[in-house]
Length: 575
Ligand code: ATP
Ligand code: MG
Image: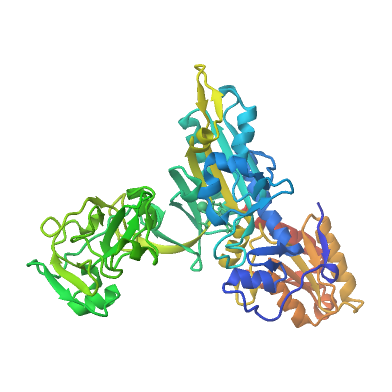
């Protein structure tokens, strides 16, 4: 397909000023470069150039899916409620699921993910192990009514995802396809020019146990990661790390009760007791689904990981401010000594060998110092409860973990039989028995990836696209459009490049050179061909490489060939 674009009739409304609503660079540049416009919080229109970028990413993803034998289809965006009721997620998904009712009063939702609908489809049509494995994917809209849509395309409410689902008769078959998907995801990141890391993750709403997230590394990323030289890496939410505990500075002695009026925070408590935050213990209260109280004890300088808490005590939720009254416990002074009758005390493993803790006394304005587990109180269970941090021990080699931030661009999951069992989707196995499909699912955030590419590829002047994602590969910029030496050369080069199969735009606007250069850098064409009067009279044009800023003079006669070769070698880097 030839791509010949004229700036004068392209809708690319660039902005001179930084939009105030944009907190991070990808959001700011997508707006400024005239690629997206906001319709409502977390809902965007893709303008022609932005949409071209999206479609480049879609195409890369499509090629990688097709290469591993996944087949493209299109599932409905609007889905009947019954499927979600059957899987149990109509309630479990909560307010993120956007629900609607049709004129007959039937309930529907906007698809936030498509496990239910695809499992139901396959249930009706795939009957035998002979038809397995089967892998299907789509590139479609998703809607999630995120509590805090922000950062432009990074956390939208309406966004585009590639989601694939696979169906298997054995765990080995699932593992094989899962590995293929994970490898394809690595290649997708490479082809998008993303510096990335696959990390161990938590499976959240989707379910299942084996899962990997692909993180585009960026300081602006919402996810915190830890990684080790040995190659192990994980999202801190999931990381099973070994926390090194330096012995407490509090001497073992008889437990003492101290009056601590006005003390609300760990830092205040530590200062008051003359110890470090690390030597205090923070107790957080939760409740089980039957309403039983749970105390989670973690070192004062560490955060409780809610994912690990929920794994340690299934179904537990941390108490909200209003819940404290109902249990008659003093917020800010909780501790494991004499908790209310029946409280389950779960303490982080790193506290196990501790000699003495500064803890809450379960009485407003009092704390205890020198309390020892086993002597002064009992811990019902020792568990791994902490959000991992740099400096913790690697669970594989014991090495010291380092930290980084990332944008989760994609994730692969082994679902097992969670959905097939809930939705009664079975096949006839080789031995004649009916068994639930063993499933996997695999998602790439297409629009989030576009923003992630910009987070990693920009400078002060604008976007610096990798050739693979660039909405347009080359821009021809005539400096004087009504000059009868400049314009014909520019037009000829533009048509020549287009004929050579290069996506080329000509900036045929009657604008000052400075405006054209600023827009070209902002939009980020990888290569710019500047056609000026002086150059033309000497038989040359200037080619600017957006990434390096390097400018070279190239004879007009050989430009199409020379540039064609450069574009081709850049394309090849991302194939
Ligand atoms: P997050 O933890 O960031 O909310 P998620 O883990 O809920 O994302 P998945 O269900 O794994 O997301 O969806 C697959 C992919 O879809 C994600 O890896 C991400 O790239 C993309 N995605 C998810 N939520 C959003 C969103 N609100 N806006 C844009 N892309 C998103
Ligand atoms: Mg995810």
